[in-house]
Picture 1 (cartoon, protein in one colour):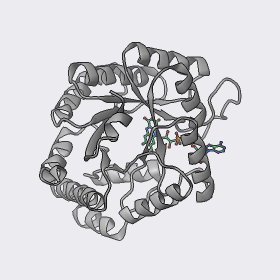
Picture 2 (spheres, helix red, strand yellow):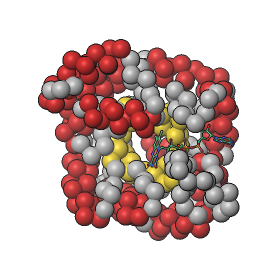
Picture 3 (cartoon, rainbow, N blue to C red):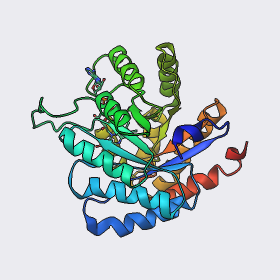
Picture 4 (cartoon, helix red, strand yellow):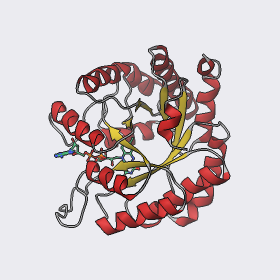
Length: 289
Ligand code: FAD
């Protein structure tokens, strides 16, 4: 089923995310974690895409497993910056053959130490969106950044380019992680003003360790509010306490979003079923409302 059709239903939708292992050897572990997350019956599970090699191959494999064997809809991520156009077309046609109906179209990060080739590449995600649209009847998601994308100094340009991306055929958007909901509400207001009307799924990352926080900061450049920083300062050295506090913080963020009328939540559960389970336990009555 296309995710956009599910999002049109007037109810709360919850989705989770897993990432493939770096080598084929880790596939079984990821499959086991995915199986447990699927038992929570989310609306879909997304599978991230690494540039080249085993990771990208395994994205399709895991997405097919989620859809066919576990009976949960899947969303396969696809990046274009580190592959030729023909390689990208090959991945799209493989996803089509496997019966995958939903793709999250991304540019991917450009390695800082390598010049970005001008020939034979899709340079921005909107070009990939156009290519996927030409290639078949897919539901297409794309990324957006409530705090602005790290490469773009001007937030207005970011929104202008986001509009271009959505107009090229995007059905829904998923946000980069954020830890202050006011930033999200402000972003929603600005993109709606700019005429972007597709559903936006806020991406919530439960931070359960100090190491994970450092990594998230490097990846997203997000701002950690004082309230979150205090939790980390106080509990960061106590793994069990930090895990509990991180889950509580993410739950609190989700409850606030739902209370303010948001209907769709994407949880960056990564490959941690216990985190996904704990959050769903915390929300068990809330998501029935
Ligand atoms: P784009 O939308 O192409 O934007 C990239 C930059 O170019 C932005 O600064 C934008 O403002 C600018 N821009 C866009 N269009 C134009 C234009 N026409 N002219 C000039 N500038 C322009 N990475 C992975 O490797 N694998 C994943 O699975 C993955 N999943 C992700 C999921 C989500 C929800 C998010 C938020 C990010 C994910 N990423 C993933 C990271 C993502 O690949 C990077 O953030 C990347 O740097 C940007 O990708 P994008 O698709 O947003 O790019």
